[in-house]
Image 1 (spheres, one colour):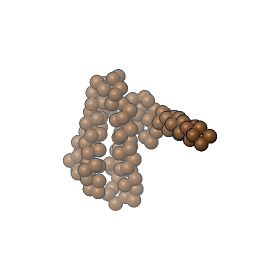
Image 2 (cartoon, helix red, strand yellow; image 1 turned 60 degrees about the vertical axis):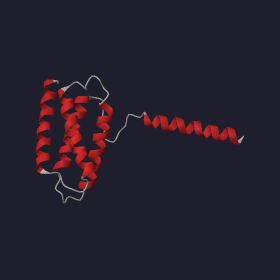
Image 3 (cartoon, rainbow, N blue to C red; image 1 turned 135 degrees about the vertical axis):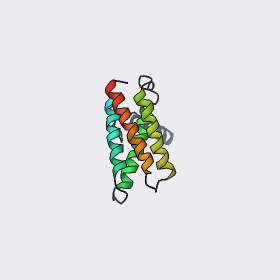
Image 4 (cartoon, rainbow, N blue to C red; image 1 turned 135 degrees about the horizontal axis):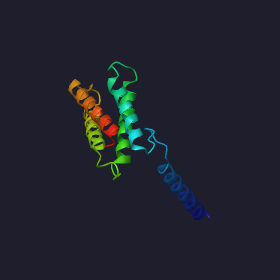
Length: 133
């Protein structure tokens, strides 16, 4: 009887974990619409970047930004309908730069040079999205 119960519990755990992994709710709130998700992520990243260094919620904003970057990349990197778009390749470049800074220098502020480059790439992504590219 113990054997039967332990196998049943194991099966239930596998099903629950599998269903939670397949759920459509997410940290970043991605909807599956590439254009809408990209614009929302851009807005969130701009907010995190523009916060002053002495802001009390700066660390939380950076943490949310890192989670959003990871979720966006994992959702769209294998989607062949968007990987060839110029907006995606530019967005991926910007995300890699920002995530690299957050990983390498978590306690240091973003250099102004990086902020300027990110803003330029964000504008390129927005204009490419308007063109449909």
